[in-house]
Length: 136
Ligand code: TYD
Image 1 (cartoon, rainbow, N blue to C red):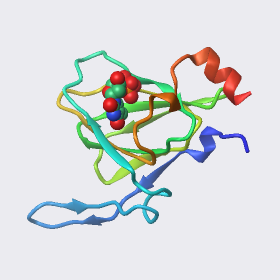
Image 2: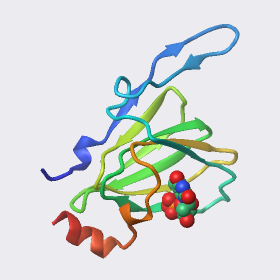
Image 3: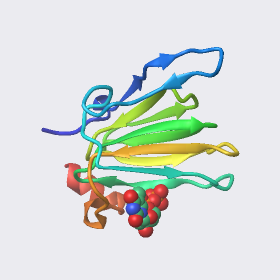
């Protein structure tokens, strides 16, 4: 089955609003459609820098702006869509086989990424031309 950016989507997370501060959470296979194998975060990003210009063959991700804001540009080889993330009570589900780039990081932004696989360099496609051939 071909992957399409239509399979990517914003997922709203539970919120427990409270005078003492709000609380949100994520459970695997419930709020996001995969089991969490790995968590990483991106922070202290200098202005004007783009990260993550690549695709994964198997890894699925869920990206949350825990603080600040940034854009995630998704590309399935045919169409491209930009998602702006700026609140910690929703995130972007990125299926496998999608080219993704993160950009426009605000000062002090913090990107939390939940991943469905352990880190594996061999799972990356770093070359956009190779990606286009891969999804053809
Ligand atoms: P990478 O995914 O290439 O970051 P970006 O696409 O945003 O530039 O990761 C940068 C480096 O961090 C890479 O050399 C490998 C390492 N890394 C790990 O060791 N484990 C991980 O889970 C991740 C995401 C990266």
